[in-house]
Structures are given as structure tokens and as C-alpha cells.
Length: 503
Image 1 (cartoon, rainbow, N blue to C red):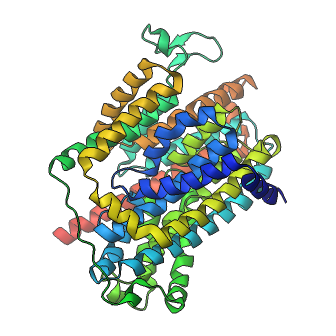
Image 2 (cartoon, helix red, strand yellow; image 1 turned 135 degrees about the vertical axis):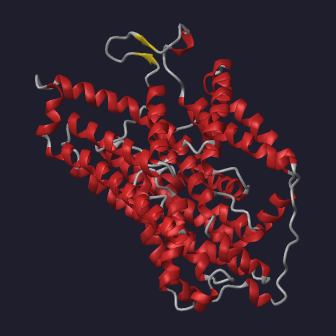
Image 3 (tube, helix red, strand yellow; image 1 turned 60 degrees about the vertical axis):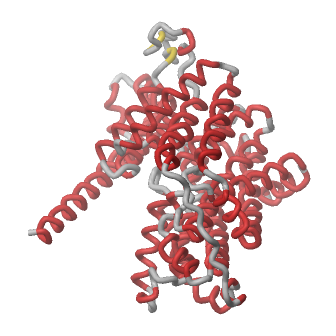
């Protein structure tokens, strides 16, 4: 009933519906531009949310994130260049189909798989978030601190190729969150005598620096080499651009498997769509009867990863809505928007702001339908247009918009300077294989973790011993230790096998 009310709100509020449609269009376009991720686009658009109502703001950014994941498949299929890392596995069979003159078939397969996968993920979000929120309503500060620690360690250990670098990125984000006035004593911390830092660093310039400006820096050198434009490969037979019902039925088992994998991956904080798409591709290929066709233009090889990377979207929001702990970069940004509008995320959000949450669910389902229509009918056109725009125009424009966005949030040139500084930091983090995403998530999580820790210590004279008396806290403390241990063992075995093969 609440979800139906959410749809009623969306379709009877022209402003909100306009932002949902705009989010779907922008998301597909942004995702199709190589190097410009949905996270970067959302970072630039966060300042807009200061001036619109909460539901419109959240729906706008949420739909951009969904449509952006799908948009990456357009350039991956047409030009062998994934618009986002989430579409990296789609390249393998998607571009092979394009070379055969079946680009339209590949794009339609990606569209169907993305829509089904995203729809399944969204249903898991709708029912899963409410269920978990009801189960966790009685958790206390010690339990929440353990959840924060679990999130820190899991994100740090899985979001980067190196466990140490991932954890270092997480600690860097937590340290940045300490800048400003102490929440209890009001004493300045790490302010370097600068009045501008008394209230801490703002999320917006950090987002823009680490995700947008650093990406522009990363693209400068490839852009100087010139941009290769691709000749469109026309289908010699009109049927090659069509997707038949028989082909859809053939893909459905792979779409189902990919959706299941993507949904499970989405529940793990920090893992993301890129991992989901490769796991789904490898698993589906192993189960396929036509293994020899995979890599040479099998439509199943497009369907499986596209279903997986879009199925991540919904479940990745469950930790945020049910526990107040963002499990992905986009979720961390949305958490910032919730807080901007005075909405406290966590188990009680369904009671305090249920109209906004169910409106967001309705916007997500509507956005899936919209980007599906855009992809089905306009995918090739969007790809052709983007391919004709030279990078020397794209990235300076993005940089200009990013700097304006950094200034707009608080009308502060100091924020512009911070964005530029963190643009350089983000560039070097990418170069050295540290994780800007882990830094941002930790930056958002750290204040809540600090508050939970201090409240826990004040609850008893035992100090930190209180955590030993809380079974839920002990479980969440143990989870990341087991996860890190498994990863270390897997790395050791892999290096040992490599050494044996090379011997």
C-alpha cells in the first residue's frame, strides 16, 4: 500500500516526475561517455539537491545511478570501450556482435537483461530493507559501532586489489572526517588554525575532487593522443538488429543467474558492479552449453553480466536504509543528501520518513522502465553522438562544471580550492591503486562510528569491555576478520599456484 502511495506521489507531482525522467536520460548519456561514471555525475549534481524537495533530489540522483550502470554498455558494445567499469565484461561478447553487424541485437539484449536484473534487485531492496530495519530496531550503540567497524574493514579489504591499500584508503577517509570541532568538547581538531575548517570538510568538494577532477586528470594524457572514431557497422540483414522472443527465452536462465549473483554482491559493502559482472560472466560461461561461442559473439555473454551489474543497484542500498551504513559510493552520496534535508537514515526511517523512502522505491522502478525504453529505441543514436564529440571538448567542460558545482554548494572559493587539492590527491590515489571510493565511504561513516563509540563507553564503567557483553557486536567484529582471512588465504594459494606453473 505504501509503495502504491509512492507511485501516486511520483505521478501527481510534476517536479518529481520531471527529475525522474531527467535522471534516466542523463544517466544513460553519462554512463555511455568513457571515463565519466555515474558517481562522478552525481558528485557534480549534489549541490542542486540543496534547492529542491527531498524526494525529487533523491529520486534524481538514484535514477542517474541506475541508468548510468546501463549506459556503460552502449560504448562497450559499439566501440569496445566500456563507459563504466561495470560494463567491462560486456565488451567481450558485445563488441564481437557489433563486428558481425549485430550491434542492435547486442544493445537490445543488454537492455532487456539490465531491466530485468535491476527490477529483481529493486524488489529485494523494497522487501529486504524493511525486514532488516524491523530486526535491527533494538540495537544499541555498541552494536552499531561493531557494524561500522565491520563496514570499514570489509570495504577496505575488498574494494582494492591490495588489502593494505584498501584499509589505508579507509583510514584516510576516517581521518578527514575528524577535521573540525570535537562533537562533545567543541575543541578544534586538525584545523591548522583555519577558520574555514572549524565545521570540518564538506562532502561536496571531496566528492568532486576525488571522483570528477581526478578522472579528468586521468583522461588528459589519453586525450592528447587523439580520439579514434569508429565507423558504425551496419547490419546487412535487418533481422540482425532484432531480438526475437526465442533469443530472449534462451537468455532468461543467464539473466536469472546474473541477477542472483548481482543481488548477493550488492549486499556486500564496497564490492560493486565491476566484480558482479565478471563473476556472473565466468559462472554463466561455465554453465553454458555453447561455451565455444562465448567471446565470439554470444548474446548470453551480454545478458549475464548486464543483469548482474544492474542487479547490484537495489541491494547496495539495503545497508544504508536499514542500518544507516552506506554500502557503495552512490549510497554514501545519497546518505549525504538525506542528511542535507534533515532525514536520519537507519531502522526508524520507515516510520519517520516513510513517504520519502517509498517514493524513492517508486522512482527507482519508474527509472528502470524509462532507461529501458531509452536503451531499446535510442541506444545506437546515443552511441553515435557521443563518439563524434572529441575528448578535447568533453573533459574541459566537465572540469568547468565540476568547479562551478564545488563553489555552488556553499558559495565558497575555499571549497573550490579543496576540490582541486583532492583532485590531485585522487589522481595519485588512482595511479598508486588506492581507493577514492573507500575514502569517501569512510568519510561519511566516521562521524556515526565516533558517536556510537563514545556513547558505548559512557554506558558502563567497564569501558571497552562493554563490547564483550554484546553478542551482536561480537558477530559483527568477527565477520571482517573471517573475510580478510579468506582473502589472504586465497591470495596465498593463487601466488603459490603461479609460482608452481612458472617453475
